[in-house]
Length: 251
Image (cartoon, rainbow, N blue to C red; front, side):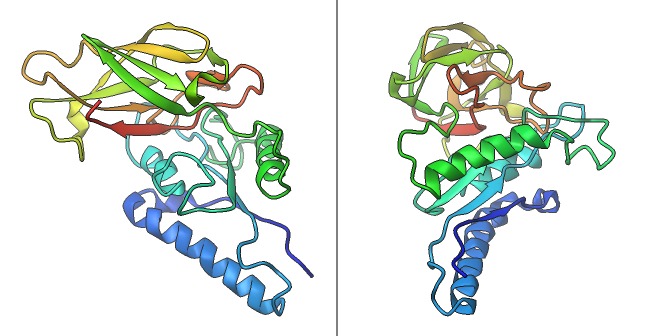
């Protein structure tokens, strides 16, 4: 029997080792594809579509490590799929669907319908090739700095965004230009101070004094970045959330 697509929910147990997972997850997908193809005597394409649910929200407190890093690694550090390391792969974002009272554990929200709708939409776009579908949430396409602000454009200005929170952006402020990494204490809040149809402007005044270099920017980098469907950026037409991302300079 030919396999059209496989869907998978990666385990949260990998969160202590996100950098390793960025390599392990693509390797696992390739291994599964090969085994399915061999077991079906070649009837199943060695690059059949593969879908997954990005890690959902978890605990109701502010934590910036673990799950956020693993969500990034689930996309092989691109922030979106499909991409060059994860071809023919699709995903559903679930970080904005917390359920702290779920009897199945907070990492397993009872709201499966929203997750299923998002995953099915992405599957239609990738696995079934419905090219007219907009199955991905907004993703940044350009970063511009001006004095103590940064304007972030989404999707090359082609899609309208819905800004639901001003609090999900952070900037990394360092005393010297080192664009490869940031320490935990170097990240500071960068609230949204304005937006138009396809971009937001954030306040980067945190990068002054001893740490004046705006090194990096990130979005929704928390275990639970928001309450239900109240994260910062959504597609105005599809209601799909922007996935978490991190961008290192220079800008």
